[in-house]
Amino acid sequence: MGFFSVHTEDFVATITFSRPPANALSSAVLKELSSLLDELKDDEQVRVLLLHGEGRFFSAGADIKEFTAVSSSEEAASLARAGQQVMEKLEQFPKPVIAAIHGAALGGGLELAMGCHIRLVAENAKLGLPELQLGLIPGFAGTQRLMRYVGFSKALEMMWTSEPITGAEAVQWGLANKAVPEEKLLEEAKTLAKKVAQKSPISVQATIELLQAAKASAFHEAVEKEAMLFGSVFMSEDAKEGVQAFIEKRPAQFRGK
Image: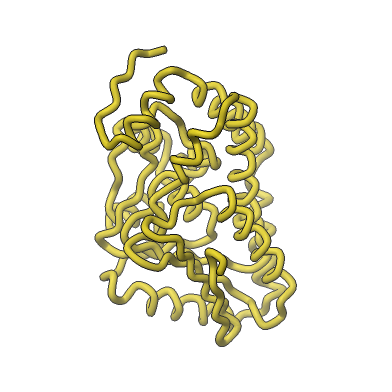
């Protein structure tokens, strides 16, 4: 069985992400999501995608244990680029993609959510990019998209402190469209998705293309720089210490090397 299941009704494809316990984004998960998007792109019965996580979280981040097998900065940069490409495919997808976020969207999980066109959140959800806690940096275009939504200073504060914000705060900062009690989240997201699905797919696709046209080429240069820096930071002693401390469930001791 794969990591994603799809249920289509009223032109809305509800995609359920299930990889217990934390819905971590491994390379295999990203590859499956990319293939799924390719399938749904040409499905005339699908006009809107609704992505949510099964269990306690939307997604608690990248698969950190997978990082221990990476042995070079080039390999780490390639890992970042692979994730960036999936997030870009989401954002460029010709059909609206709505994320329904409960529990937590952290690290790669928030980068996945930011790749979607619209985000609805549970009021008590936690959203953040805590990679610096591990001596790393975001690698799936998170440095660029977070700044675009919450602004320069708030993005730096969130990354530097590694502290998440709540779903309610995410709406205030422009990172999410609406916050609702967790038990109403999926229902609210489906209501929104059905409203969008009633529009002409041709006109909806045109709006997506036009909004993407506003994203200057500087964005793509910046995410390539993110991948390169992810690779070099990944090979630092601090990063090795941060990842090991995470796995051993202890505070990291960073030495600036």
